[in-house]
Image 1 (tube, rainbow, N blue to C red):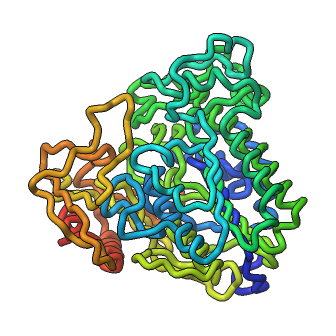
Image 2 (cartoon, rainbow, N blue to C red):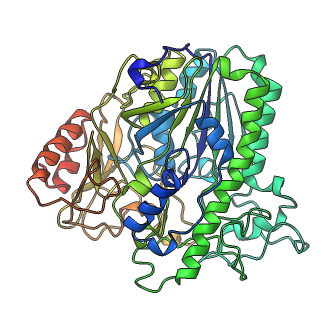
Image 3 (cartoon, rainbow, N blue to C red):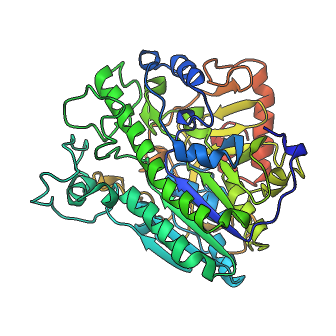
Length: 533
């Protein structure tokens, strides 16, 4: 594949299509890793017993990759779901200031700027977090939006369909606590009624009916698959674990030391992993409908197509499942990114990139300038070959957990010292991830310790609420490992099996992290809690 400096400069796109598949694991995709590499990674990260698992068949992702630039050093920024969407749609790192929330009053989504510039914007999504407390205003500045009901935590139905027997919803073990999807799934009458297929059909229909009626457009497809529940009908279910003869295990635990603590048997763990594979295969199939529409309408000639994700998902690597209290190893943070650009041939990009850069790229394509402080760098110079790099580092993390920095060949995770304090939340939209099964985990209200402060680049006052040891914390701040840092050489040890924290190399990593925090003007309490003050 051609190097960046040798590529044709291409043409500036008229339109952009973003295809965000939630929890898409880079190390499952054949366009990134061949079968031998996938097996070697499983052995290195603790799933050697499953090294014979068949790679996922993704002909449509491969089809997109065949005409795209494949970004090989792309990393998440703010985790998990809604913080990642804040990075992409708002362009400002979220996790140093707050855990999970809506667009704040001092900032705007890219769709606000595009609307003022006369660009039509369309959202098609089955992602329930976009339409609940803590994520409810990301869709409001789109020209139009289509919400497909029934996925995961969407409170769509109050009881199972009494006539569901015989529908494609195969018997499945219930979630560890009752989940809305356990009822919703009984209403799907055919494969094309599952949320993922319906979302892809809606995106295809919008392209065919409306795309050529607008001078310029952004189509944002926020598809919750392959996020759990890993529920598929035939012919997808059982494809990667044909010997399983019990109810499907579609809900992964969120756990560490899963096998060591007998939380799951090896057979159950394999079943969960296989159902994830089936979910990837199914949504890849329906993604083909969108690619067909792009073909039929000749949109590749003037449209940039971006395939991305928010983060990965542990599926037995390091004996972990879900997104538990582990550092952000590459299985979770090193994510796929494909960009097809008019006039640019397929190739690879070895430059370091992160999710806030997608926001800057969209702003660059449509020549808009957000008024609030952003942290991204446009990827257009990498795509066209005008530059070999656009950033020296990428910051990533969850609020209240380790702060990670990735640079050219190094990944450093800095843990809080002592009791994970001082810690503060900065927000004027007081919300966090709703946990229906654990109402006691609701976000504590601001108290008399709160004060008005200012985020970098803004004159809008914001509530800054400090937390002390023993306080109830927002959901993602619980159970944080303290006094244990991690350092990995990504070139010599890409699967992160050798921890070099505590060696002389850590001092340089600390200096790089401190400089990166200075660059984004991180809150003072972050330096203190990380022992960097």
